[in-house]
Amino acid sequence: MKHIKSKENNTYKFTKSLLKSKCRQKEKKYLVEGIRSAELAVENDMQVDYMVVSESLSKDETKRDILNKLEEKNDMYVFSDELFKNIVDTENSQGIVAILKMSDVSIDDADFEKYKRIIILDRVQDPGNMGTIIRTADAAGFDLVITTKGSVDHYNPKVVRSAMGSLSHIDITNAQDSEILEALRKNTFKIISSSLNTDKDYNSIDYGEKCAIVVGNEANGISEFWEKNSEILVKIPMYGKAESLNVAISAALLMYRARN
Image (tube, rainbow, N blue to C red; front, side, top):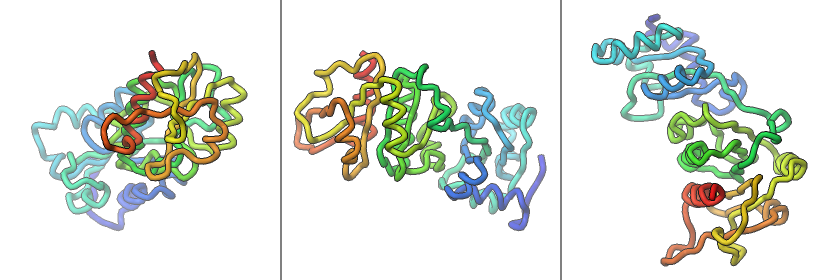
């Protein structure tokens, strides 16, 4: 392990820069925090650039075997505790971060012929919601997650944490609305959007063999573009006094219903 204690160190500066979206997009790398997340990255043959552990974790004998296994396959740096706290956004960090290479597909390179079920996140902005939807899409056996322009960066550390390793199991892309629609129409997907502007119950429709489900922004729902270009608008009924569901819950209900 290489020990780093200076704020002027280039590896420290680079690692810290990845907390910013513009730097992640420029370098095509992102941070994954936590012991299990680091193990999953290795187990799933993700492209690990290097790993960083805190000085405290490096001295923890109860974690020695885990760290040794991780270090066998990856470069590992030890940051002083003071430096390490500057590269994480959690108060109670486990003391390990893996730096991974992004593995997004572009909308042009995505293999729509093999996809059957797609979830589209239209300007979803909360990192926790984004991560939960990605994780649920993985669990529900969806093939592709598409985020539209205006959505939170799906490599935001809070998104990555909420997704719990699912970024390695499902294809993800970000694209303009018109590009997404062109690809869906070309490949005969039925577009089904969650909306309050309909009386059609989400349980009452046929989702078909190839469907793309659209869920919208937390405050405003789906955009006018997706209202106009969906084959079907569906609504999840409210039996109590709440006006609507959290977007991650709505997405989960729709994706599992599409499986039936």
